[in-house]
Amino acid sequence: MPQSLIEALSRGKIVVASANLGNRDLITDGKNGFLFQIGNERDLANKIQLALNPGNKMKIEAKKSVEQFRWDKIIKKIEKVVK
Image 1 (spheres, one colour):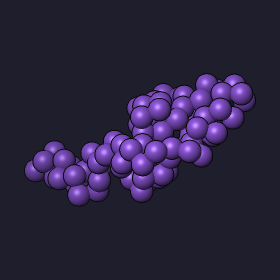
Image 2 (cartoon, helix red, strand yellow):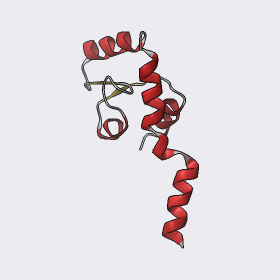
Image 3 (spheres, rainbow, N blue to C red):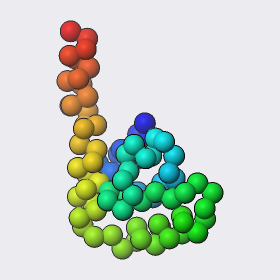
Image 4 (cartoon, helix red, strand yellow):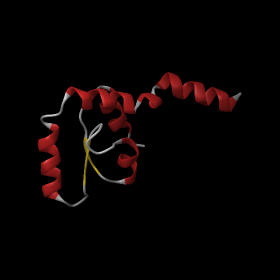
């Protein structure tokens, strides 16, 4: 799980990342960030261009999409397993 992406999304940052397995678990292309095809420079350039002009809705979606990874929620889940 790419922690740096979780942190960026939690701060409402628009993320552009390669479409690998870990990133696809966090990012829905065009909804809470952008995914580009690995090895496709043109796709990367297009996604960067899109990220430069996102609406506020995408920033809100970015924050909401990683809500489940907040430390207080993770700690509660761990405590349930350990008890």
